[in-house]
Length: 140
Image (cartoon, rainbow, N blue to C red; front, side, top):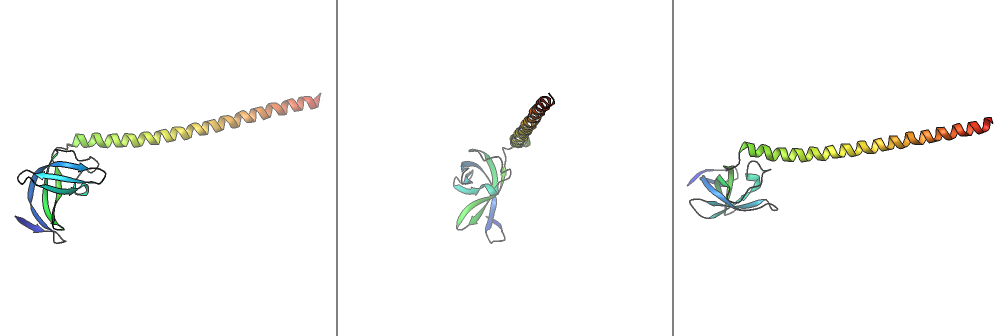
């Protein structure tokens, strides 16, 4: 049953429910098996919400099917097994790792500055003591 057309004349079919059969994270695409049709339907990660959480095999989704280049493609995919607290945990992990990297870089830079300052002042103290000894020898 066709329910409309997209701007590029691809036809939209009814809303379906299915499970992700397989997902290739390196290529960014996979296949969904529709519950009522038992056929593999292509999908791309760009058609999914929460792209930062990778799709999992057997994850339940709802989607629309369009005819795309004489093949079927899933679009407007909704993830049914992803919950907001799961999203926050994933985001927090990413933010923490980014913050940790920035923190380590900051501490490393600070340590280098401290070492430079200590060596500079130590050098100044050594120079000052040499100058004092030289003055004392000259005054004798």
